[in-house]
Amino acid sequence: LVLQLMEDTDCRVRKAVVDSVDFVSWPTARTIIRRALQDDHVQVRRAASNKLAQHNMWPE
Image (tube, rainbow, N blue to C red; front, side, top):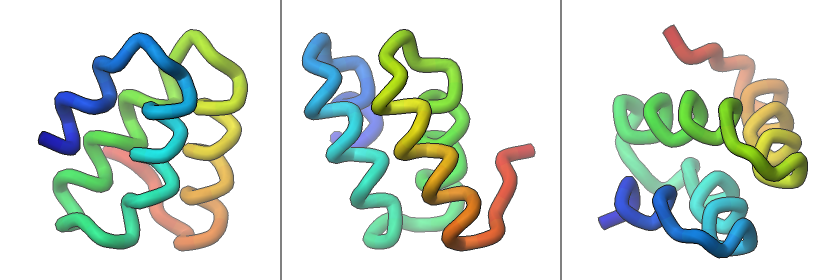
């Protein structure tokens, strides 16, 4: 369900998913971050970058 929300047309929903990666498994979080870094909307990409920096994690 969480990954399906990354397909939502509303960028606020996608940003909220990125903001919630602390509450999902590591593989799911990595997938979310990877998708968010390629998002069309700058706020979603910025949220993903912030999460990467905050947790010192990098998608493979």
